Image (tube, rainbow, N blue to C red; front, side, top):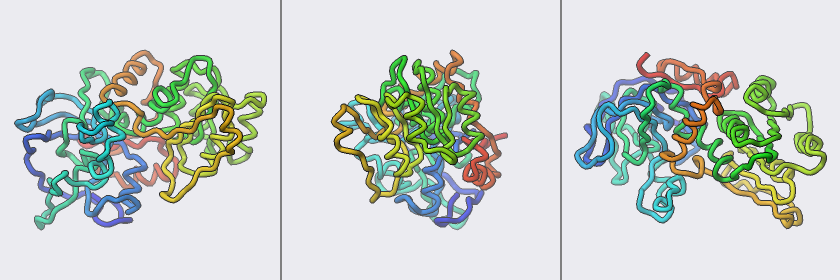
Length: 363
């Protein structure tokens, strides 16, 4: 639990409500740590404290509310974002762009303002973060947040990151950019999101995949995952390097996952005519991206992409099939930690030691 903004996570015993008619009780067994969790813990997002965070959960359904259909106790599930299910974007199969996205995912409470957790002094603790609050042994979730996983061959610790980071990067490539075979792709930033984008680009048949980062160990991993070229941004001008690698033409597609405005600008600047850049990194609310207006006239496009640009219930099975075929080795990104070592896991993520830290709840 995060009691106060900026403080370390605490392990506390809390009391959880029984599921309401439209809720599901999930026994969490694994959860990925995402940058969004850390931003919320630091107080940089509209998430109140005290709060149980976590939004890349995976586990087993223990109980379902009376109005819930489609899920039953014993189902293995991956949890992703919450959505209203009724707005125009939800009905179009794009729940990541739900008109109620901010309150449902960041305000850490039910739509009626209530919470499902109490501490030892019977004080309310915010939950329902991204409809799940999975930095816990159990939690209440809405059915729209759940994706049933029929295949029992993969451990839940491998499945958990599919709820956010993995689908964000891979979905940007497969859905927002729609990378074609023989295309050229540059990926800026090799965290979970960037490496998932890289793996998806390789799986899509891109003939040149250029990986850009400042950490040599990440560049080495990128090569192992299929990058044809790597650029160390700590020692080279990344824009010039990408242009040199493409004989001055630029790339058909670029993916930016750092949240740094100069990197976003570079991702746009290296596009070939008719190229498209996908911006995935979260910048400050008042940050402005800069692009040369004349260069945009050459058919270049800049797009944002959230949570894979496709319903998780559709995208996650797509990625699992690629994994089954050996074309999307997401397990290469994962380091596991017991839940009790959450602060060590956070420190390793912030230091760049772990790409994707996954907490296991019932070791």
